[in-house]
Image 1 (cartoon, rainbow, N blue to C red):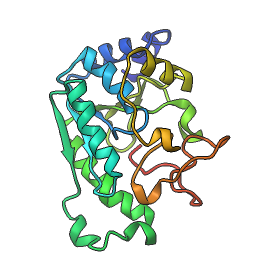
Image 2 (cartoon, one colour):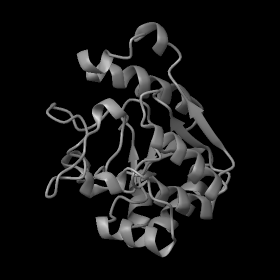
Image 3 (spheres, one colour):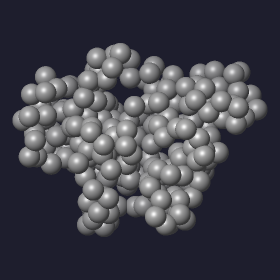
Length: 219
């Protein structure tokens, strides 16, 4: 099915990808970090299906600005079905909230991967905001993929968008920006593992800086 959908939508845009995805995968959720560019996908999805389940992972290590922004965007777009999920055992396994300083992969596994795995158990597909330009590991992603290990379908409506496409869409639709973007954070994750990005650096250079890591493991 994935190959057929990608072939069918080769010359189509994000809105068409979302429409077809909702038709082909009835039990479809959207996973959003409510980060720097998240509002674009949320806006597109809300126009096609405002009832789409939106899963937001509160790692309990996020910037305060992200939590406020999440509420503002959900209200602004009138999202009706937002699910805020958290790790069940973070207090027991990381009571000092310092696991990230000892083992960043274990922290991501505890606070992101495990909660999302549980949340997605009832769905056969999920929508992501990944784009090819974001990193080398995303350079070849297509609109539809089969997730290794689960068989779940991942939908990437913005896969082929360029940075300017994102900026133009936000401006044309007057979408609210994450407040940290203006402070030098073009990619925003958990507060302890996100730093400002200097001119000339890749947008995700501030994520897990100085570590051999550019994905949290969700994808």
